[in-house]
Image 1: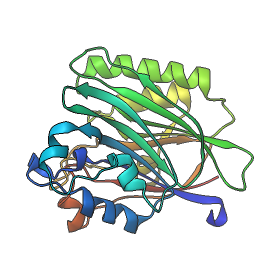
Image 2: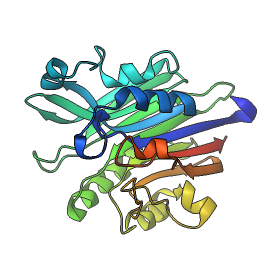
Image 3: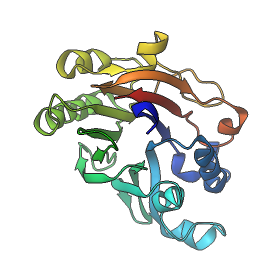
Image 4: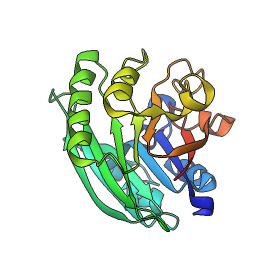
Length: 250
């Protein structure tokens, strides 16, 4: 870990399909992630299983999407289901070069038709006495739904994350009006890395004309060095979201 720095990427991968679900693009998406070579990735809408796609898509990978993306570069990973249906499931994943000491998937679904969860992992960082808590999430579309999910998230952090340990919460917040920031700041002393460095949240959706600040990386106990929205034409041909890549120093 160079100069005690590490890079974290958050990305909603749209189950490995491009905008409009017209093409299966998981293979070029993995190549793009390999080229970025972040130390830790928080991925949302990652497919666990899909029986129909397995039978009909010729280049559908035999391992699940988490294992397929992690192959060779990232030895440690955790997958948490947040939507289960007849054909399979999808959810959130933490993929890491650093060991995962433990992880847990917490159901925060108020409705059966809108399953959501928080994937909470604890990473062992090299050359550090402190572990890093990471929560990967994908919040609901409705404001009422998100309020209940944030309440559960706050309770989880207060009960499971010691105040002296570094913490990152990354993912698709679906909070285009920015109502979560004040609660995070007041109750959990969290800051958002792009806003801290650039003065506003990154606009990440839709990827072809980013207008809404959906994807974010909140932190505490770390020093942010850099944060960028990856916006080359390559990323516009992949998911409907743009990735965020942040560099932190312990």
